[in-house]
Image (cartoon, rainbow, N blue to C red; front, side):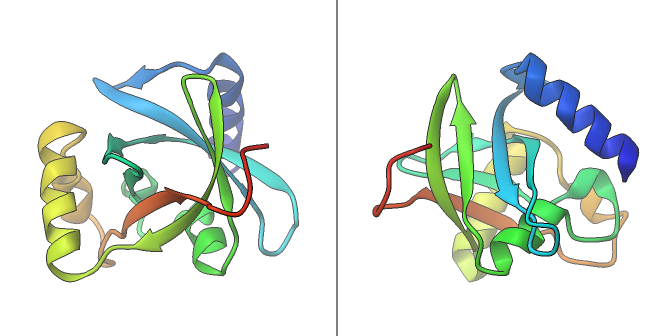
Length: 136
């Protein structure tokens, strides 16, 4: 976990726009236990007024911290191409999830390689801009 945080810190400072052929966003959430802000680079699919991401945790068989923080009711900040936007995260379900997951696998990354390695179902998360506040 410490190695992962170190890598995420470096990536957040360098701010590359692409990784493994896909576009990257930076998601900052506040720890539900620590209260500390943490920034995580994520591959994403632009879905109009929202960004779609997968809580894959690099194929590890536990939920990523950013998703646990959002699921616990926290908000996040997405940074894409230098622009920051406050967001809420919502797990997609049913046909909406299946459609989004198929598009993510076809256009962003083959998340099926991760899904086959883990016992949990990878959450597909829509990051939607908050209507009540501008980005910080």
